[in-house]
Picture 1 (tube, helix red, strand yellow):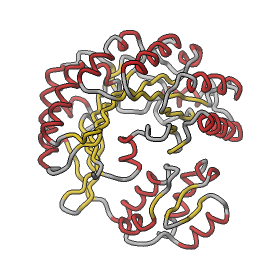
Picture 2 (cartoon, one colour):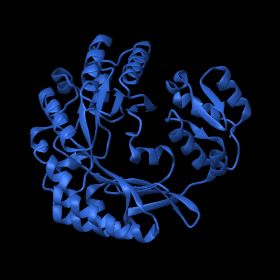
Picture 3 (spheres, helix red, strand yellow):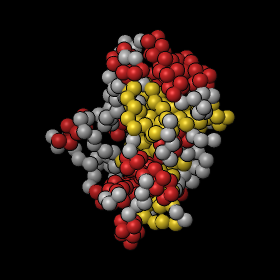
Picture 4 (cartoon, helix red, strand yellow):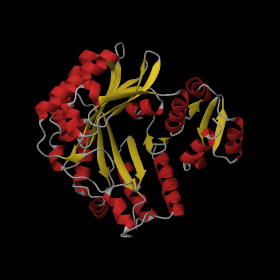
Length: 377
């Protein structure tokens, strides 16, 4: 079955984290009835354009979608089932924060149809959680993880490392603790400073600094080794899983397959009448709720060069790499042999049986590799 996913963006958060550059707003005066009406209408519109597909994945992201009423999540899942149908093993993920208030709702979300919970734990250390601006404690994080592992068949959690003044020994102890819980999927991200965030302003005034590049590389290598030794090898640059527990929704992105998005600022990639489109919705919450579909959704046809570049950027994140024939079909040309040879000699890529993948060294410099490969394309 061809994979097809749907992403719901719920923009509300109780607190805006200082590192976050997502399209989020404070959780005030949410009109649930208005959201239910607008999202249902948008689903009808998308379903008319994508007739014949069957959903293999639904993902509720944000923001903090665990703040939405579980009944709304259930109604949206039911509507998706009626419009497209669900694959027998469809993955339905909800992102959640581990506060006590949200933990009380986990069972209701399972009843609504959620079968995979993604916990934004970020750290198991109270000092780090305060620095990251999180509104939960390490104890709440542990309780939420234990509850999720008991309630849901599949659970994943996020952690952020390479924090200011964090030592390798401290990260080793924290990651080892997380792995010891029996978690089967883990997303681990190096702390980055995104433009127009509170963290960028803090770094600009020299309140703190990220670790130097050599130490960041040591953090990365330590993470890869610990996860692999625990039976969760990397299948993507920042994602680790036991075999069979990979995120099916995110694999849709990385395999450059079709997905639709609803909610303010949501993105999609759809193949309509033989043309691949980049689909995007208005970011402003007020605009999203007020506008009709023709004004809310933007569909931009992608050139073959753009498709090839996107396939490289997404597919090379995977340890399995990309299929060179698939790249040629998308881009309309082959990757430049000179650059492929050069990167191979630099031990940043390897090519075998028409598959090009990054080496361990290449995964550290993904953007450089992609720029080299596109230089003469």
